[in-house]
Image (tube, rainbow, N blue to C red):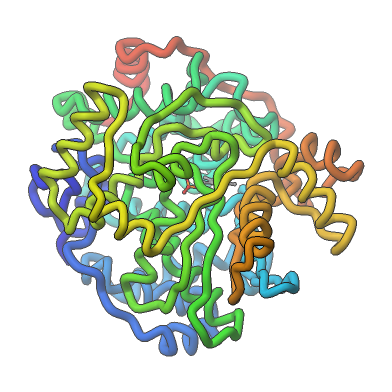
Amino acid sequence: MKYVSTRGGAPDLDFEEVLLGGLARDGGLYLPVRWPQLAPDEIARRAEQSYAAAAFAVMRPFVGGVIDDDDLERMITTAYAGFDDPAVAPLRRLGDGLFLLELFHGPTLAFKDMAMQVLAPMMDHVLKRRGQRLTIVGATSGDTGGAAISAFRGRDAIDIFILHPHDRVSDFQRRQMTTATEANVFNIAVQGTFDDCQGLVKALFGDLAFRDRHALGAVNSINWARVMAQIVYYFTSAAASGAGTPVSFTVPTGNFGDIFAGYAAARMGLPVDRLVIATNINDILVRTLETGRYQPGIVSATSSPSMDIQVSSNFERLLFEAYDRDGAAVVRLMDDLARSGAFAIAPGPLEAIRARFDAGRASEAETMTIIGEVYEREGLLIDPHTAVGLAVARAGRTRGDAGPMIVLATADPAKFPDAIRTATGTVPEAPPGVLDALSGPERFTVMENDLDALRGFIEKNATTE
Ligand SMILES: *Cc1c(COP(=O)(O)O)cnc(C)c1O
């Protein structure tokens, strides 16, 4: 399988290069040159064996033989063996045609583990074969960093630098990153927002000389392999719902990676009715779908920090698709964005997007209310990100949407004890052992929002030369 850049100006690559690289050299994101077609019944049959068996079948065509089948199957099986639910991604029926897809049974209690636990052994495997090292640099709004550090800590061939917005992630999220004592882990607390962190990482990847010198790799959802691993649970959950008809998905959305995986599943043959983008008050995508104008605003801090984003990187992948894979058109939009702080989607592509996607936002008050309601009615605690998704899905119900709707539950409520206590009066219990692992001393470096400072820090600490 070959991969093409969304901006049409970078060489086509195979899976191995896309896995180890990050942004394309023209600033774009990689996508497979065509969508492999899968038979949903076949994936459903494999899912009856195990989640890992279904995952192997979904990922195999994207890997395209770059990793031997036996090795790939073993990595996937090992990755999901550590999850604390035998179903890996269990589906819970809520009534009224709503389901919750629990994606938080991995080691860091958020859905990022679903992909990261597979990404790390794949990268390790490929690097060892090539006799190379890699410097991973990533930005996190909270959960990616913990999931990445959990997956990459202590790996010989890789240094990992994670930027998080200083004082804008929860204590739990921060400790998941900063209590890692392995010498290959570097935490940087940037005095700024997540978008600042992401901007720094993007700029660093744009410095091609630096990028080559330090063999920079990405684990943000700009890395195609992340999105690839997330396609799996769209197939398995549709099968587990027993709906037998097209299902819809509501996805708590920030960087658009997770919901783009749902789009990919649809392109690969899964019958999908609607894909619903759910955001908190950082609602750039809702405004974009309403008006056709993509205009980042100012980031507001909310109780769902992993969605406190105004620049949604993976949306570029959808634009590329909506513009019939016209890289030059994407370049024009991104130029507009850089020059004037916004771009307008042409009527045809906008219609194509609206044909598959809906979008809704939930306020902080609505988020808290739904956490309280679900706890009262069902005795179930949900985290604020999941609550945003459920609030948006419920609002659709009251407007008359019908048909099976799967809401992605993206984090364990135990990660957000303060919000849950406020909403319910109850404190969620973390799975056994999790809190002990976070009690050690913390290690991180506070840094200004400054590219030169970041370059210098990596120069000094990375062992990749
Ligand atoms: C990352 C994250 C999201 C947003 O996912 P995107 O792929 O960035 O859209 C939602 N919820 C939680 C808990 C997350 O960690």
